[in-house]
Image (cartoon, rainbow, N blue to C red; front, top):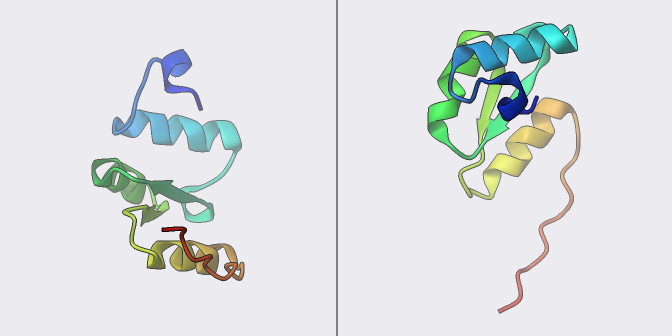
Length: 79
């Protein structure tokens, strides 16, 4: 969903509803990831599972678990 083309932007609940409609999915079938906490409650209200990409290394594991994936081991960052 490109908000500019739809004329609606997050966190307007309509963009989430329209996205579900276009995908032909219910909220319960979806996971939404965003780095802005303000964008999560409208998705949650539609039954979408949300993950806050807040920089906490644990969020990747939470997301992988929701998707039934095994996360790759973390690679140490270069100094």
